[in-house]
Image (cartoon, rainbow, N blue to C red; front, side):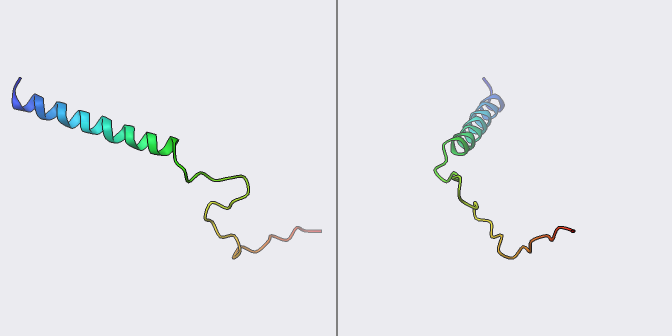
Length: 53
């Protein structure tokens, strides 16, 4: 094996590890939103839309 093939294999393994880590963190995150939370969004500055009569 030449040095270029080794570098490509190492970069590929690193990329697979990185993507796998991102997927694992997104699937098993402890910061999930419950049913009664706003998920960090503040809706207090939004005015209610008035319905026409």
